Length: 293
Length: 237
Image (cartoon, rainbow over all chains, first blue to last red; front, side, top):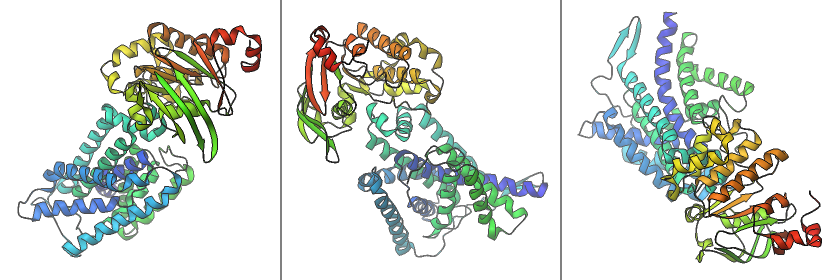
């Protein structure tokens, strides 16, 4: 039992961060039905920004840097939407263009970073990186605890934004029915731009929550892209809350499976459960979209 | 107030509107009648901006409406209650109403407008915290109209408000609209299959057939002429 808890607790902690990464992807898909394959590379860029702020002289703690990271990536996401994404929104025949555009952006990000910083892994190691506390027999890493708490805080703010502000309500309305939202006087291009910016910023913040225990390379996104997509599909396409639950679930499975099998096969368990849930509930746990692509 | 000139529109080459001249005066209530596929909904969509016409012009208060994007037309006061209701099913009735009042001229007046729509459709008052998708068809239609009223429209466009409803539910909708028109000076366009109910709340009617205006007449002319009534209103009632 203790052994189980020793794996469950870290699973929940990392799952909270996965949840944040996935909710950004889920928000973008839910609102504009664009699958953003560059999402994990925005995360990678945010990790490099956190690293640069920490290692680059000013020694800014990645958790303290997060509000700044959020704002930078909110603006970057809105700019990328304005420059590129808005031209491939909508119609069914645009899906190919969306896939090519977002994969292309991801490749460009990866290679720009590769040129600038090489492929050498970068590490952010603040003084507490290896600290932790025992609660009973369960060890809780301080860095992971901070990452989890911060993810929960951001998720709560996202919930308030979507439910309690006029812009948030407009985003939810546009996500549910863009034509009806248009008749309400909602500027769809604007809600898309904001949703894309917020979605990118959520994943960026999730990425910078990871840097104290995850080394950074130009291709670190590939390690998380699968988790993010699995979480979004598991939770149900079009549901931000679903993506969040999916993320937590995947963190728990990856960790708890190590009670029985090696860490090397943890994603086999993830996809086993993934297939099982989709077999029972083809639209995911909280799915709204019947057939999107 | 609103005037279309030589308006034509189509879907992928299939014409839906052919050279339509249509006019709504200030505070006027106009019915658009006609069979399925006559272009009635398309006409409303070209006015609200979700369909772009191929040729022709639309002016609203002298302004070129086609130069405005759809949300700017709502800001100008044109509010479209679409066919099929299009309620935000996963959002509460209260949030649906709040979205109806998204227009900047309506935001400050939210409480006042909500009191008004709950007076017109008292059935909604007990359901404010329910999800839109949990309402019956009649209640959803009430909500759709109420959502439009929330925007303080200058021109309110109702597309088939009675579609798919039982006669009694449809009556409730028309009673609500009639009550609204007693207190409001808004202009209105009603697209309806139930011609007689629509004419009760309107001053004038257009009959569309195959995308063309087949007839334009006042209520008295239409209802007073048996031959016209039989030809264009069917034998209902």
